[in-house]
Image (cartoon, rainbow, N blue to C red; front, top):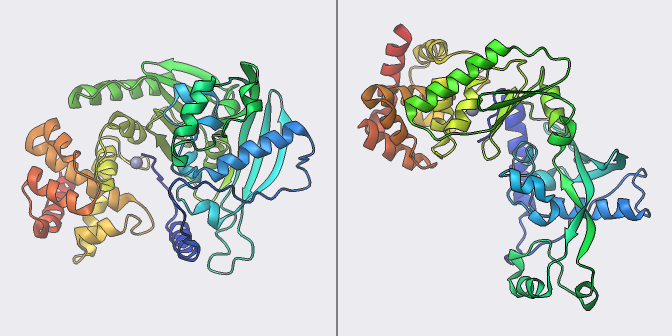
Length: 424
Ligand SMILES: [Zn+2]
């Protein structure tokens, strides 16, 4: 799961409220499987009378129409990245963190320009005429994507007939065969999308250490001793929790939040981030100018578990800390927070991941629950806890089953354990 470490509370609230309001306005009824091409206006720089630019424009419009927040339309991507990665677009959940992004910030195609072997597609996500308080949450993003012509094997006639027989929803982007298309030669060339991450970082330096492939800009000084410490952390956690191997891990090191966003093709993004992980792709992105990022690495190591969000962040914070601070230091702050907020409940914390302007309280409460499980019966108990479902009621049921604490006693138990862990 991706993790916004320093996603500012104000931005989060304003964008969330804005998206909800747009969502209510634009709810429309469509039959299942209905795919409608969205409007994609262009600037005068986009010359669609050029056949190649028109082909790239059509490809990009299909992508934007294909629910990019939640669906991967394989017909639009190059085969190599589709085969290698769980998700061919590393920044997907960062830019499209809601179905509403494209409706709320309608894309404007700024340019399609030749860059070496590729065409670079630049898009602005912007909403016209917003008023306060939403005015300052605009634009959402400026994005670069790449497209290149690749050889395509035309499906044989039987395959096309089989596809044609499928219900519409199962063949997104598929065009029904015509007598002409059936007469096409066996091989043809068409434009396909390429993840900007690999195009942009292709010239970066690389260093393999254990299961990690580090990628970093040429002028970054790589510290081998810190990389070695990271590999030892992976080995120790895998051994203690008997976790399956994740290899290779792609670890991208940058030095600030603009550099990390630019590496994935986001020239600007409203929701900035100090670090993220993309678990299906086994990728870590850091803006902290370091080979060390145990929090995001922990997310990768536990990627087979899909627990409640507070436990997902809890295990990463318990083992890997958060915001460059270890759990032992974060839990002291949590104890002080509880001391000065004696009526706040566990449920209120569950409802507010961004308390006091950061995620620290939410993450550390999750970490306290993980430590409580570890102290009861070591790694096995923690893994049982992480088998909770994602809903609040499933979380409470799991806490009761694994930690033997009733729903009404959870707040008091967490307060008491937080104090004990902080006093050590
Ligand atoms: Zn996290």
